[in-house]
Image (spheres, rainbow, N blue to C red):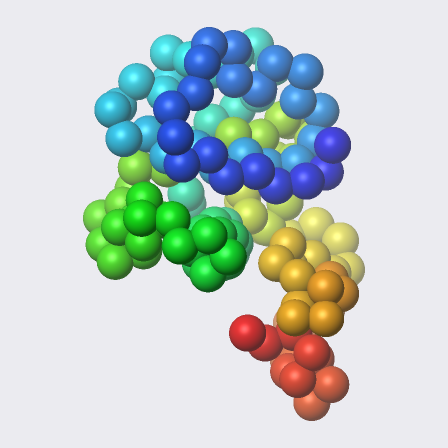
Length: 139
């Protein structure tokens, strides 16, 4: 609950069953993802916000850096086309989060990627990174 998952492979049926929080990004290479989703529990959409796209790309980049995944590399090498093959899955409780909608509710935006120190990085809405944040949070 409250996490982020990225699936670059195929999925079985009933995706999202029991999902009460968090965001899922699913690569739909064969165009059949929508028939595998539990639409009674979760909502789906293509990546529609720059925050969501950045979150997804950062996670795939980290996956490639850590594993050397050929699939991740191919997606990143052709990002502008491949990002359109991803579905974002979320429960209704996440509908107003910055990665799902253009409206931001709350005082901070949580960046899901971890800094090299493994600390999570937070940035107040409308603020700029200070020197410490830039050093600690920028990849």
